[in-house]
Image 1: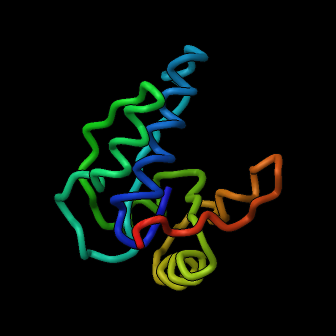
Image 2: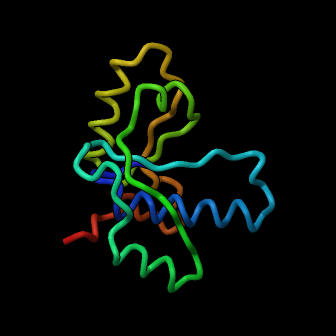
Length: 123
């Protein structure tokens, strides 16, 4: 799950997805992580508002921001991003990776309400 800085949208999506997988007792079938296209926030915890939102829904995370790596494109089956800017950046980066196996899509593609873009709540 990819966003620009990996401190709002993507760590929230990662934590929610992990909770859904855990609740369904499917942890052995999924490897979930989130990362950033940029290196702006590497090593930082999610934004305090993101953490508050998760806590309000009974979800915890110990995530630290990281930047996407070449290996991510070779390891993960799916790389899901939040908006068109992330999608363009990821497609550009994936073209530079030999043996890219990841299918790169907008996370909103899977939204039953068809909200394709997940807007950045930071500002």
